[in-house]
Image (cartoon, rainbow, N blue to C red):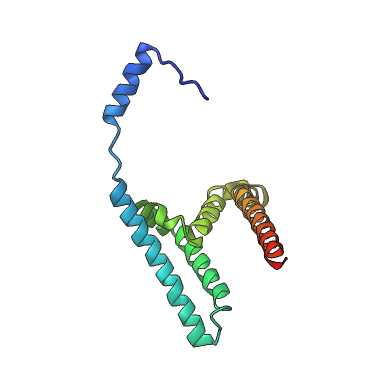
Length: 157
């Protein structure tokens, strides 16, 4: 078990002082905003999928790729124009959950470090974030595949 750090009298006074002035979090309001904004993004994605199915003859299975690509493109453009940050400020976690949140993070990292050059600035800093996400995704897929193979083998016996 981790030990709790003992604070001095001055540190305790400061902790109390800071706690009194800390703004109260509006958890319920933030959850509603996140739910609404994430739902709107997913509804737009569903509308795009229907558009690709009805207009271009995609199947339900194949319409996913252009739908995700369109959402990513829109997110990157909104990030570049500075609009996505305003949406995310209001919506909170609702914009971080869909694929648009990851695209926004990648684009904003690229924009922030563009003065350092394309390779070391944009590429290097953009993939600092993406590397951990991709590594986690690959590892998770490996574990799920192992579980699937294991349960399939047990069920087949």
